[in-house]
Amino acid sequence: MPSYKPAEHRAVSPYLIVQDAHATLAFLVHIFNGIERYRMADEQGVIRHAEVQVDDSVIMVCGHPDGQQATVGSVHVYVPDVDACYARALAAGATSISAPADQHYGDRSAGVTDAAGNIWWLATHLNLPAGVA
Image (cartoon, rainbow, N blue to C red; front, side):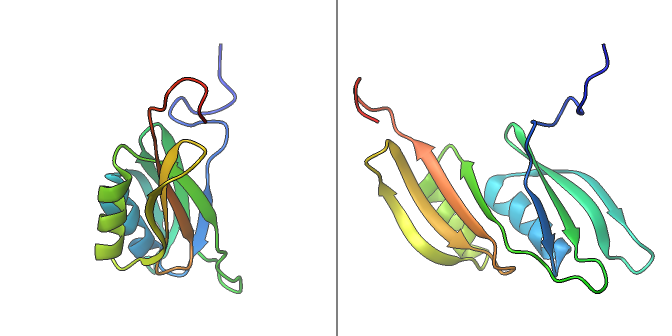
């Protein structure tokens, strides 16, 4: 039976419209160990659509169309090691919003802003005793 979505996609995927799609793709590949799966550029080299696989999800990216402003998004991503991911993000030029810290709801989380202004909430879920978070 045909599916209503591609097999590699979840029902919801972030779609970031950015000034410099090349830089955003490099950032995603570097900090999340993402795999660029698709890239379509126009004759001027502007990326009109790209997809990066991050774990079990796809993040879509495009350079802003002429006459439109780039949009800023806020994306939450669970990663295997929030401290290492946060360090990679800072090394790649991201700005810290909050350093990694254990949270009362059961995650160790951090926040960064990338060069395009997108906010990335990074988290690793902690194994807590039964009844906590």
